[in-house]
Image 1 (cartoon, rainbow, N blue to C red):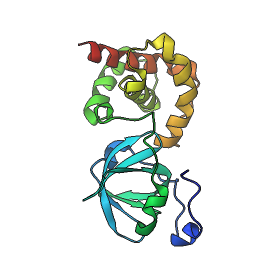
Image 2 (image 1 turned 30 degrees about the horizontal axis):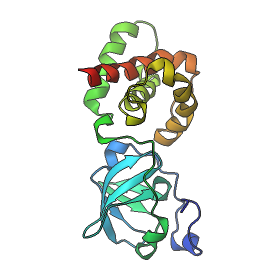
Image 3 (image 1 turned 30 degrees about the vertical axis):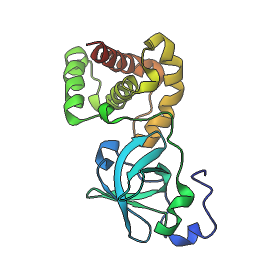
Image 4 (image 1 turned 45 degrees about the vertical axis):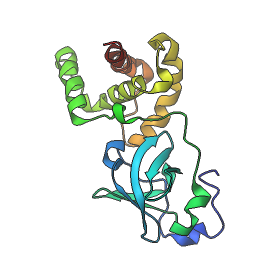
Length: 198
């Protein structure tokens, strides 16, 4: 079922509008998922594109759309779906995903920042304006759907996907043209190619 086509009465079930929460995937994995009526339905196991996987107790894991997330605090994810309607919102696993080995950690960010500062530290540019681009290239480089594909082969697809990615991860990110971000995304993407070949 599509995420925006829930059963009648769903709007009245909650007082908040889902889909407006800004979050980082690494903040969510392992967190407790609470339904709209406060029931613990399991832990968030993984995120793939527009869906997240719930590790449910005493039943098979299942997928829910990320736009049902209302808020995230203290490793607790509140969703807009009542516990008795969860089955109406489960979805097939999305094809594109951010896998666990593609997590943008502080350690990974520091490695890219050190290299960026060596190359551009005196240019007047700000790392914060480019971090999203490096993160995007890194995560896409580790995404199985891009396995064994060269930068030249994927650049057009990544350019089309990038605006949607930034709006999901951080709507407040600086909007810059692809030409200014291309080198950062390419370098991060190719660095993961080297990891896979190692």
